[in-house]
Image (cartoon, rainbow, N blue to C red; front, side):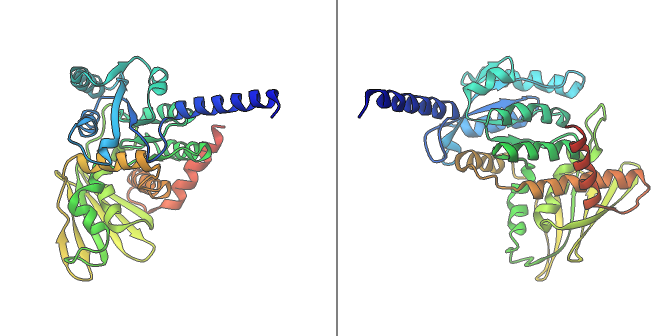
Length: 340
């Protein structure tokens, strides 16, 4: 074999090894080094606890949080206060390196969790992660607007990067069980009335349901499934009721109320869903996503949920007029196109 060909082949092999080293372990191989952007929620410390636990089993045992960028939003008081609190918790662990920028974080990790409290920051954060080719979990809310959410998923699709977002309520035991349509006490779901707090993030700069109402609405969609067509919202004082009509004629509602849960109507009976069961079920799904490369919630399903939230906000502004999911999605898509 000619010596010049051997040299070229060696160069290609070395370059390929270098690329694989940057990309990190492939699904099913080795430990996945996880980085965190934004530590101003307890989710950052709870996910780290679950993944870095020496007694963890797969898929959690395959992932280890190795670095974090504190991040946060300086003009949001809760972000400043909580960032200091949970940043100190991570520092004291001793197994997570605190870095001073996203750019410094990315070369150290194979996958990223964006846990920044303020959803308005998520698009800019996700842009950097996606450009680096790292799979990314984005904590609720996925973004500060429906248009930002549409852009994040469009960027991820174009780059071939895995991306997903979910509330921890999606994986609460009773809620997840009914959502499979196999709960013997309920059977096929005919309707659902979910509830959860609706506490906006102050200062208020995004649709109010995005910050905390997302939990109760994600309960609704986990149980009902996708297919909502129109949304109507009624607000009296601090009380909210949002009604969705699904394309098959089923009706689902979200009501603002302390605690989390739902009452579910099925062809076999009526039953409560149960409430929140901690962060670990979501941590498991995040780890499984990093290990397999397969998002457990599709972009389409997530965007429908945020279109529901956006439509509810529009309905409130317009005195309770029904708003279609399709209309707010089309408006968001046009906004994204206008940014190019």
